[in-house]
Amino acid sequence: MAKQSDEAFNLLVDADAPTEPGVAGMVVLRLPEGSTFSTATEAVEAVLEADHIVATVRIVVGDRLVGATSARYLSTALGIAAHTPDDRRGVGDGDGATLPGASAEFVLLRYRCRRPVCGTQEFRLIHDERQPVMCPVCGETMELTT
Ligand SMILES: [Zn+2]
Image (cartoon, rainbow, N blue to C red; front, side, top):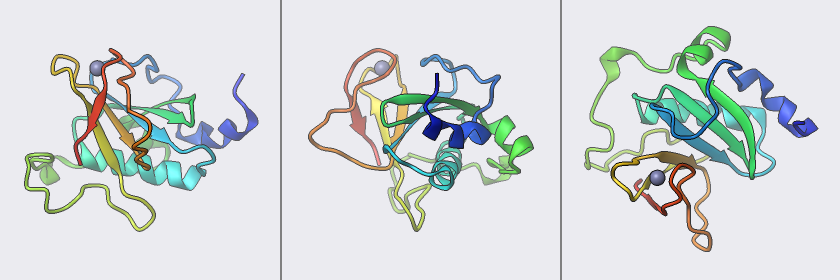
């Protein structure tokens, strides 16, 4: 049973999207406990902007899996245009000049699994140095890449 606070995120969740970690094209978005729907929506948008190969976003609030959403669902249900083929560019190619997904409210942090064959990515809004980020797929530690 989802807690009542999670129901606020129902609009964001695509019931048809896979929720198991490790699906191709899936990234994890981990939001702080108590995040609002609008923050979650902005964060999901930022994730889609930050990485154009993202097909599915697995949304975790605190330690709870809220569900998963997809770029296709967001554009049809919420009118969020994830991206167009024209604005593709080499995100993460190392220029580091601009941070994709930066907004007035938060900075999107991108973690990548240290195991190259895994390559799972997790996005967070808060960096906590006391807590290493563990890959939800393989259990390896993840490193901050942005
Ligand atoms: Zn991994």
